[in-house]
Amino acid sequence: MSANEAAVTKPIPVPDELTAPFWEAANRGVLAIQHCAACERYIHPPEAVCPYCQAQELSFRQVSGRARVYTHTVVRDNITRGFAEGEPYVIGIIELVEQERLVLVANVVGVTPEEVEIGMPLRVTFERLTDDIALPQFEPEEA
Image 1: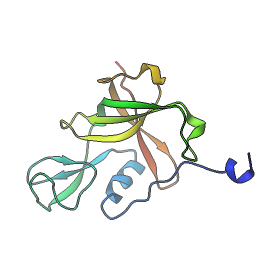
Image 2: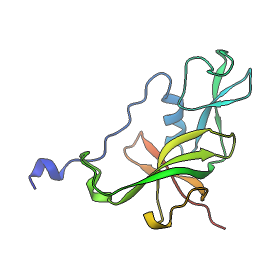
Image 3: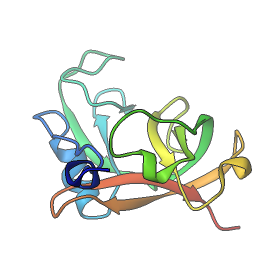
Image 4: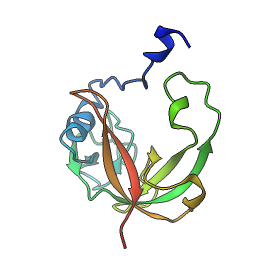
């Protein structure tokens, strides 16, 4: 392995105008999801206009961080640079308890891939990537 290969790290998310509030909250250890004041629905990923009612009064609200595994896959042979060291790992479609089908894609951590099950209760945790970016991930919720 060359010195350049050893220095490879995970890709870092780059916030834009729509996603910046999500990443700012995550950096503080808070899961905040875009919310429509008109129809009271959560929206993820963030949109410029509410996809349910077309309202433009959108803001970010803190959510509980409680969720469940909607579905998942186990990555055992990733060709994307920066991820091989963590193999195998679980990528989940995570459904937040605040709203049916309010999902985000995140790693399931703190459990072996074989232990992850559809419907498994989870809670958010954060992996610090840089001083400005913390990545939401999910771990099993304690009983």
